[in-house]
Length: 328
Image (cartoon, rainbow, N blue to C red):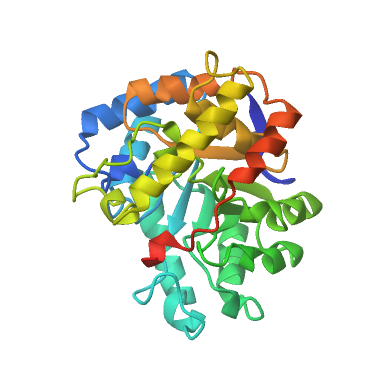
């Protein structure tokens, strides 16, 4: 497993990270023994970075991760997320930070995260969403800095809202975050324009999520596939979205075959290697629900980098499809 540095002041992390959403629930049926086996397998494969959140099963994902780490001797870094207090998601431009991320709320929530994870210090604490409306008065991040000084938090991060990922550019330049978590994949390449270059300029770590577009870029799902109603992707790929996505996935597959990679790389390998081709990326977190998925994703790190001419070709798959999370 290859490793990269998580920010100029951070630590070394595996370039493939364990995404902990599905083991908390929300992706259809999931059983704790299978989740625990997947976590152990990931650590066995050299994955030393796990990303989770309160919102992944109301702390259930965190609790499972904490339980597994108590049984292991290896150093594994955990990033979790504090959601804003009740209100619109993502926060609207009219939301006040005082109502969503007050100092009292943040302090109480961080204590909850510590209890769920069974630790005295969180390696990376991220605010689960943000709005650029708060950039000129980013008091919540100053509260996190106090918690960092008190030893409760290692690194401070923000997970970008899907519709306004560039909101973190000012935060990075102002030195308010150590890490940003962004969406970056073959379809959504927005962060390549400014977020990634500014991360390199400021020494900010970059955690990439949705590298496989919620599973679509694995090539497993055909145009008529329907997800169970207990799986959030039932809404994410609502209407004709799955059909349109599957058609574009086949165009990516055609590029892979033209370059003679189909016998050595899976579509998922190609998608993850595209993300990892950017040196600004510290790690790409991939949802792993069972041991088989762990083995497949960990193997990607061992493959050769994609050739430059293919990387340039793959840029054409950028897709301006709107914000599907918002119902478009």
